[in-house]
Image (cartoon, rainbow, N blue to C red; front, side):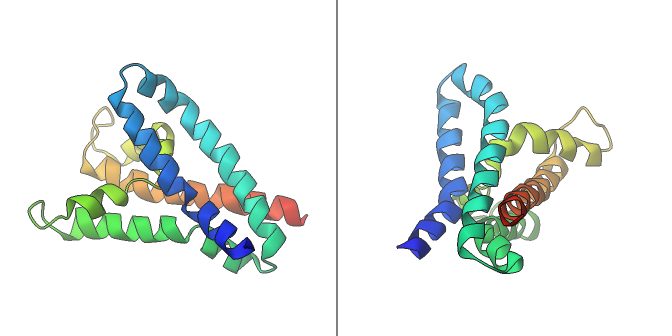
Length: 151
């Protein structure tokens, strides 16, 4: 039962990201949620890191297993958006690959814009950087939760 629970917790950012993206269909609500979601996701992922600390003794395995869906998502994202052309891209994989970090978009895009030649624009470069930044942020928050529980 514990392993299933941990796998569900590890997968939960993908589900949360999907539900978050569905709110884009609700005018006004998505904008408000866009500002609240990064804070809620960071607090939640810190809590999940603490939960993994109770079941895994080695930090490397806990952090790897807790973020495995994020690592896979970023890998699929770069495969779909960097290595493939628009015509070769698979819509379902391309959409799935963005769910893990989508609740953090208000933070990651702002940082990703630093990689642009013109900082007021958002191009594919910004979006590519924001995926890596989102995964890095999730890894840091999860690790902080794990180590806080172990301390």
